[in-house]
Image (tube, rainbow over all chains, first blue to last red):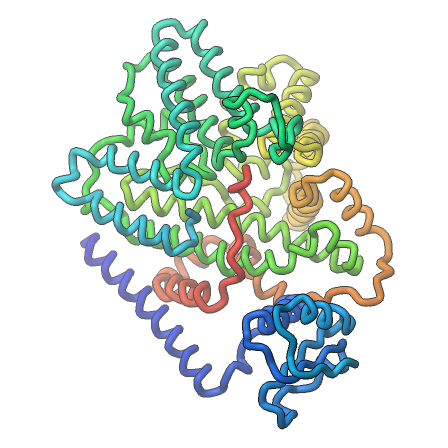
Length: 112
Length: 454
């Protein structure tokens, strides 16, 4: 009796976890990443921005600035290899400094 | 190797698979000892030597103490306390990064060794072994049994601190058919859920309590973060303990429960019967009672409480903050002691709720000394909670997320036990499955367990 109960319990548990993961996978495919929870703090968002620039190839154009520039969507620009390095709540200098210490420069900067 | 790494998952799967194979039936203890040594030495193999010295030394003193307890028991205890004191408190006097220390190569090597993970826990196991077995006047145990008791990997790094008289009788052949899989799964899933979903996500926010980041916080956020840290440290340590209990069950061992809804305590003495219960029990058995407990009048009782709590604080770390944390808890115990009978006699739900709130507030405020081991930083944080902030651009904390990540702790403490044990019993596997999915989908960034540093 005990092993049967244990097996049933574990199967139900595993199936419910799998179903939930599947539902979330389908929802993400359907609705995109808009369903994702935001970063825990605004500065975590900044870290995400910086990490993204550290890991991705050197862009042709980089925007550096603060909250106003941060609001500019990259998709808005025609230049495909453009990256927005603005840090909301900060100043243009951290973005500028991070590029200055980087191994290569983008083609051009736009500094607010 | 941390419990939350994939390497640990592979390690447990291999050991579990081999453990119940018929050819290993007679070698189960040896297998667990080897696995535990591998677990401990993974990443820090140089510390295996220290572990070996601690176990062999304790075993030698155990043999001697079983022949002549009055002489060898204190020496055995002193040996273990010396180990703990040397490795834990040497950093108060030496800087391991400096070019020249003593000038004697072997001593310099020892001084440069990092704090051995879990030393506070296995030293307490050693002392328990010496005291319990010599008190019972038992026969000299096998060395492999002693090894297993001290270094059993689920409890090696952060407990629960298991008393020898509870663990040693459990050492016997184990059978696959006896494994309580459902109970083990519940403990392990709950532990991982509290660690990955609650503690790791809250850590993203409470990392702003560190110096100098806390200088940027608004006053109300300082308050919020203290409460979030209170939830985080519970989720982190309860999570670790739950995983340890579940893993031990897989190998046929039952470890003591370490937490029993501590934030529902209506008094400070009750809190210490619900928080880190294995440490409280150890301190009561091996320190408070031998000091005289409450048998020698009020003044000695208060003094004993202060000594035990002060040493309990220092056990966590060599620093004024930890000492202050312990002594303040001791002071609260001393202050409440004359009134506890009268307070408990008042039969009122509202009054009990007020008492629970007050104990929770005090315990939470004292966690500041735990979070900030530098005493000046702790005082700086504390004073900032009572002065308006002047930073025009503070980091924004998302309060809805703070609530979302704290909710499991709040529900666990506030929901009645009968809700889970009777009403939701049928839905239990689905609830645990949902927890498994949620901890995978919404796990916070990887951080080590808070109690690993002790």
